[in-house]
Length: 193
Image (cartoon, rainbow, N blue to C red; front, top):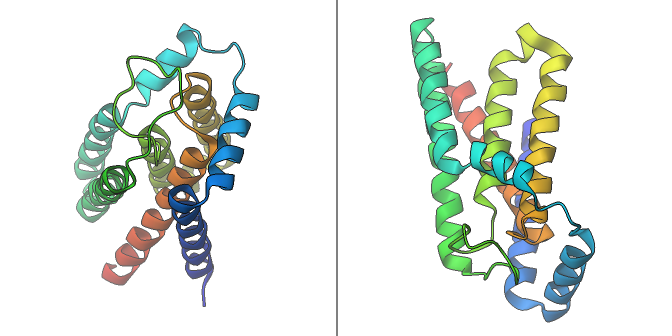
């Protein structure tokens, strides 16, 4: 069995455990609230709001369309479709989970944030977009690209906690879901090629 299988399995197990605990464990939710409170600092300034805005799920769809257009212009039609499918598939699963879980956001979250909390749409989208970009351009751009994507991803994670929009489990759940969906999409791509 290849590494993608194990990554898919691990991310699925983490996601299932989080879903179960968020829905059923009062102790887990109390710990999640406590950890959220400990992680929040006075970092809810305009900078974190800008990072959240730039990584808004709707804007990531626009970025994905630009990426697909770039790939099509380079005669990479299959990769363009794959990039669009991967983000779309991941976002649809994320929307379904949000509506099914119906987890309320943390107390004192911004009025700009609406909807449910689990999983974080910002982290879900930025994680899967980082994985898509890494998959497409790692061979050409190397470790510099990895560091850039990792720094952007960490800034999104910090912004979601600092803006009081999500609990830590929302972040971990979104990351696990993104990795799981990306792994499935990557396997589908490999089967087609």
